[in-house]
Figure 1 (cartoon, one colour):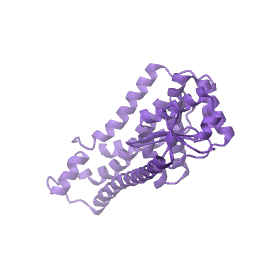
Figure 2 (tube, rainbow, N blue to C red):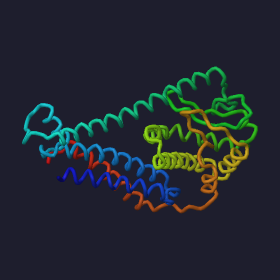
Figure 3 (cartoon, one colour):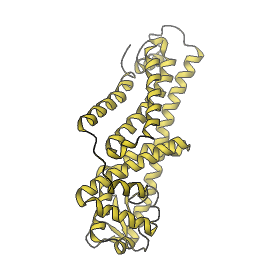
Figure 4 (cartoon, rainbow, N blue to C red):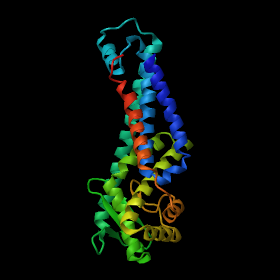
Length: 299
């Protein structure tokens, strides 16, 4: 019963943690830490749900999930015949795990194709920005975004060059390059896939929160290099000009909660103490690794 109780507790804590994270105002003070907690919560929810089903179905073996599955396949060490309920729980657990992997693979493949087509189009219509910091598109609308991928690139429109000062433009480009250096599309991928698979309000709210945190991380990196004021001014100009949404699969500077990000850049948010961040990080790692260890450890 210890496996069942542990995975049930993990799943309950993950759901409670996600609910608390969607309402936690402290995240603006430590977006990187908040992103870590969001991913730890998502991993714990998946391992908890799959582990709960498998541990219920494999309970007669009194082994870790991995060894018990091996024993089920080989027919070795079975203590008693498994009931239909046991086999149903095992099948449900395996189906849930396979569904999670399939949803993520399908979403990633779709995004990869969209980005590949867009990069091909950019090669035809784009040209280098005068200082070689981005690819320039001749378009009057204000647009600045990053196209992820092995041949990823930062894209700006001529409308941006006309609307922003040099300091503001440098801050926006630093923001987009921060997305590239941080591989932020990988942080967004699980939540984008979940939102496509489960288009319900709690999932949409969680995905929107993660997207905002990613933008805040890029804002912080750009602000450290060029100052908060130029970036805030640039975001305000995007808002005034009515910047159009970036193409699907890209990450844009002005697509997510501009007003909230400007207020954050203008305001004073004291950082969370380092020892608190370290303690939360270690706790998150423990929460993630402990349920996963029960998949391979014996009783």
